[in-house]
Amino acid sequence: MNTFIAIAYIVSAVFFIYGLKMLSKASTAAKGNMVSAVGMGIAVVATLLIQGLEFQWILVGVVIGSVIGAIAAVRVPMTSMPEFVALFNGSGGLASLLVGWSEYHTNFGGYDASAESTLVPLISIFLAILIGGVTFTGSMIAYAKLAERMNSRAIVFSGQQFVNAAILAALLGLGIVFCLWPDSQLAYGAFLAAVVISLGFGVLSTIPIGGADMPVVISLLNSYSGLAACAAGFILGNTVLIVSGSLVGASGIILTQIMCKAMNRSLGNVLFSGFGAASAGGGDEEEGDVKSLSAEDAYFVLEAASSVVFVPGYGMAVAQAQHAVRELGKLLEENGAEVKYAVHPVAGRMPGHMNVLLAEANVPYEQLVEMDDINPIIETVDVCIVIGANDVVNPAARENEKSPIYGMPVINVDLARSAFVLKRSMASGFAGIQNPLFYKENTRMIFGDAKATITALVDQFKGKN
Amino acid sequence: MNSIMLLLFFTFVLAIFLGVELIAKVPSQLHTPLMSGSNAISGITIVGALIAAGQTEHGAVATGLGVVAVVCATINVVGGYLVTHRMLGMFKSKSKVESPK
Image (spheres, rainbow over the protein chains, first blue to last red):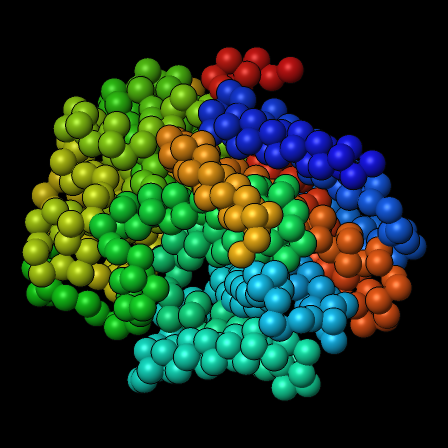
């Protein structure tokens, strides 16, 4: 029977690997997710075949968890996706913490500290509660920031680095006590203290990160939740946990890297600098006139345009403008223009956020283009319509060496024949940086709610027909 | 370290490399589904939770912790897969958008 279970775990790992591989191509992604879900099903069934398990409590837990998970998954609107991914991620982290705790409680009193073989499970338990705890509270803070239940700006206080260093030192000390005398009351106390400190550390390490850097944090927390599962795997000596945990850990790290690269910043800078906490970062005040445009005048320009590129940002999600944008795009196409949607890798609040919203509004994925594909041809574009994006289209990243975002790759909308910027007001973007795009010769500002503006343009087009 | 632990560690290192290879070339439009899909996979910790909740002979505390772990891990698994499924259902190619069903 045990061999059978072990083989089932291998099969399930193969399903996860295939699932992830298929998830990385648009045409096979939906199937890939199902393949991976089947893998999960196999792992669960195989586990239930382990001798001596009693099912009544398992059933209670599974039913409660399924109901909560399913209701949340079905009801969440697409615009709230980032915060829900954070929530799900956090609950996975908490689960790993609890598995470690339960395992320690079970074996408490039965450890033989002198035996070499107990050391690895002990270290794994400690790592599971540590990573799991940080994942849990870190994800909860990310959730609160994304759902705007707390101020999404970076929160920095003096001595933050010192506090973090002290926490790490304390965790190391507690870990040593825990591993050396695992059966003592002292160790249990150290263990509980470590749980509390890990939870606190998750909070402290996430609050200094501003909303615009959330794509990085979510990817990183995703990676942690995988590593926490991995640690749980080492506790139980369970291969399927180790393999799938590391797959998730690796994918999270890669996404984190991609996000950091898209902002031209190091991971350390994102995590510790409190970017966006300062109100006005760097550079001189911009000089020049802002030229605004009414929706009617914009219509005449758009009607004559033969190529139009939409550049969405977080503001599109806030205004819930994705459906209106899609409708305008369709009308423009019927009018003979070539329409594309250019998405910056860190636009929005999680990796790929804009793509999901546009997909929800039925934009075919062939029309979605990446930054590196649009920039070389941007000079041939008649009109770029920037909807609620700011820092990702800021030419200061290219031109102004003093700008805090200098060197970050941006979509060069200022090089297009003309750029319309839909914006509520002249307030600066999330990073609090001036945007010289607004003052460029070929830029026109269309002030007002993005959805209202787009809808007005749609009406103009419809009125014509 | 005994040889079993070394083997597990070896598995871990290989799986990290495999993960890096698998994910390295994902187009950015799939980043969100990839993240929520891999997030669902991290719910694999449910395996550990099931074992903890099922071994009732170790007392109420250990079982209780296990049951809460099962709840959390199940939320992660069920929620993660369903949300990913919903999201991917919206990604349509041009041919599908223009002739719905």
